[in-house]
Each structure stands twice: as C-alpha cells, then as structure tokens.
Amino acid sequence: MPAVTADDRHAARVRLALLGLAALLVVAFLLSVGIGAVRIAPLEVLSILAERLGLGPLVAHEPMEAAVVLSIRLPRACLAVLVGAALAVAGAAMQGLFRNPLADPGLIGISTGAALSAALVIVLGGALPLALTGLLRDALLPLAAFVGGLAVTWLVYRIASRDGRTEVATMLLAGIAINAVAGAGIGLLIFASDDQALRDLNFWLLGSLGGVTWDRLLIAAPFMLAPALAALWLARPLNALLFGETEALHLGFEVERVKRLVVVLSALAVGASVALTGVIGFVGLVVPHLVRLTLGPDHRALLPAALMLGATLLLLADLLARNLVLPAELPIGILTSCVGGPFFLWLLLRRRGLGLW
Image 1 (cartoon, helix red, strand yellow):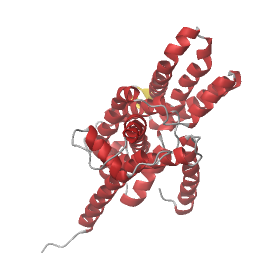
Image 2: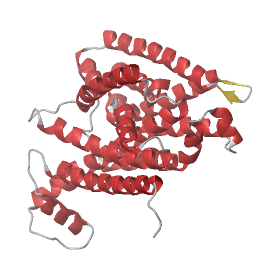
Image 3: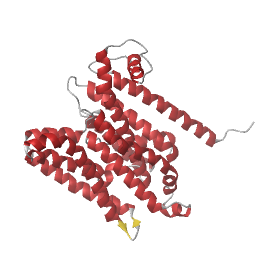
C-alpha cells in the first residue's frame, strides 16, 4: 500500500475545502433569497425555482411569494454572487501580479475611476434637459462607471509600459497617484452637488445591490462572469510569478502577456461590478487572504476558492444589509468596510510582527 504523502494530504484538504465552500454558497444563496420582510422557507424557495424551471412545485406556496423571489430577491442574489466572485478573483489575481497580499483591484484606480465617472453623471445630470435626464440617467450611470474604470486602467497601464515592458512598481505608483486625483475630483463634485445629488452620490459611493433588474443584470453579467472564469486559467503563470518575473520567463511563460491579461480581466470585472453596485470595498482584499491563510498560495486552489467565498460573503453581507435596519436598507459598503478595515489592520500587524504574508 503506497504511503500517503504530504502533497496527497494537502490535495485532499483542498478538495474538501472546495466542496465545503460550494455547499456554503448554496446555503447562503437560499438564505439570501428566503429571508427578508417576507420570510420564505428554503423548501418553498426551492419549490418556486423548480416550478420556474418546469419541474413542478415541491411544496405549496403563495403566488405573492413566487413574485417576491423571482422579481426581487433572485436577481439581487445573482448579482451578489457575480459581484462577490468578480471582486474576489480580481483581488487574488492582482495580489499574484504584484506579489503583495495587501494589493486589491482598487490599487490601480479601477474602482475610483469608475466612481468618478458615475459621480459626474449623478451631479451633472441635472444640467441636462428634463426629458434627457429622465430617460438617459439610469442608462448613463452604469455605462459611465464601466467606461471610467477601463479608461483609468488603460492610463495606468500606459504610464507603466515602456519599450514593450510593464513595470509593476510603476503601475502601483501610478495607481496611487490617479486614485488621489480621482478622489479629489469626487470631493469637488460632492462640494458642488445639490441635496438630491448628494444623497444619490453618497448612497452610490457606499455600495448597494438594490434596484437591480433582470435586464440590467443580463447585460452586465458577461462582463463579470467571463473575466472571473477566464482568470482561473491564469493559475499556473501566477504561481510562476510568485518566484519573480525572470524565473517565470525561464519557465516558459510570457510574462508581459500575463500582466496584460490580469490587468484587463480585473478592469472588466471590477468596472462592471462598480457600474451596477457602486463601490464595495475590501472584498478583493479580505477574501483572497482568508483563502490563502487556509489553503496556501497555490493559485490553482486560491482562485476557485476565492470565487466561491467572495460570492458567499457578499450574499451574507447583503442579507445583513437588508435586515439589520428594517424597513430601511444599510449600504453594503459599510458592512464590508466594517469587516475589511479591522482585518486589514490585523494583516499589517501580523506582517510586521511575524515577517509573513
């Protein structure tokens, strides 16, 4: 009988962890769809979904409950899954690119650029004719946020690129500078906004999953789902980058191509997420770290685990945001920051004290 090696035990632990995360995601999804002002039991939720798929109801349920699930809670829960997965995978990929566990997608200005573009629409939209304001503002807001995130990413990448090479350190510094400039622009818009625009802007900057419809979700979903899934194929080159760019190049990976792919995929995923939900902080930082502390730095396990854990945590955060202050709704960005801020400080203290990451 062959002996069980340490690698075999680690592989078994990874498989068990992935199965556990998948089960936890299903439970969180059912809770998110079922709990709210109108309580719907998990079996009734499954019955409503089964009936919608043409399988027939499992148990009896009210038509009102089916309307609440299918029209309000289900698109919101699907959005939470997509956004949580996109932000977490983008965070894990960016940390692998920068070889720094304290990196996140906002580091190169994606979120701030998207927020600045959206703030322009919110504050300056009132200057449009009334007919245009009513018809176009809802469509312009997510589009502007998405384009703004991509534009800032392109600018940072161009600044950091020279002679066909991209310097990661320069990209980091350029992102910090552009974050500062975009933050100043947002502050100026807040100063110039009226009461209504100020309320809209503050609520959007704090993040919310409310107001999503199936039409908006289906348009934005490919821009979140496709990059998150595509990033899973970058596990091996990201593992190689952990040893340094020269070593990765010697192992046969096209380092510059990997850099471009990570930046583009992160920009698409985060830009689309911010376009629909506003700014939701710390998910891209906290989730990859939680996974790394448990499963190690191997991106073959880190990326899929981060995808599922990010979706689960955002589902649970949205569940709390909807129910903590009923009948009002707490911006989800407040909850993620309340968890992410102390966790970030703990990471800094741990790194300083133990010299680890």
